[in-house]
Length: 322
Image (cartoon, rainbow, N blue to C red):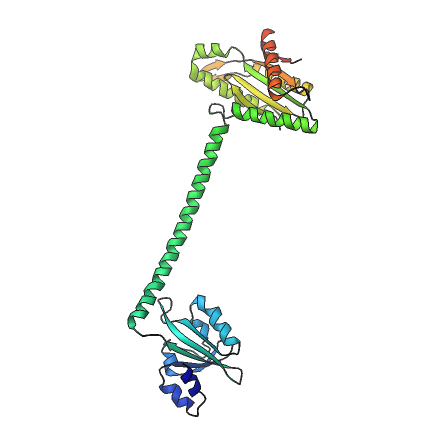
């Protein structure tokens, strides 16, 4: 390559260009080809008057090669030239020689010590493309698996926090909400009340109609409670036929008004299950939080005692804890 570069300065430059087996081309610094010898033309069968060097280069080679040509300095490197579109490329020794007129002479010499080398390069290129396709497929598969895993985790979380019969928050979850609300009320000196709701004579319903119908009654009662409390009140299944309602920022008066409304609504509702018309009533015990006195469990005990007081009064009513 160095000897060839020295020959370019001789007087027989045109003759040399025609007979050497090394590709030589004259181009602008932007890569536009102006003139070339037959050996360079063998790299690509067809040229046009506006042909640019970048059309011979793989995408990953373009920036590097064009940068060397545009710098106006002597550069030597090993790069690839496409020979059949995307089917393959040939490895070449390249030299960019700056000319006095601002143009660049490019010398390209194919590295072909053995034909097998070119075959290996083409095979490796195909393997790289296949790897990229497989890699893209693997990424999509991993993404789909991630989505599936997140869905399973969401379902597991729901199972852990939701009562399977009523789809309300289960006992563990509603108690956790109560603990958080008690801490919040103490921190910000805000009001908090709770209500424990019990379905009257539920054992009689089970004994009379059977447990499947009893389960449906509980479901419909839970829907009535959920639909007739205000936001941000929360209702959860506390256990058996008992429910716990948490009323943030509410005093005893607000809890009583809600208990009275729920008792009346349930009293007026007829539950239809498999041809049966069943009427149920509620006993509700409410308790406002006594700041710096109550803990979450003492608050629950006060509400529970109030609920039993309502039952002792004849059921289908409410009572407020002392």
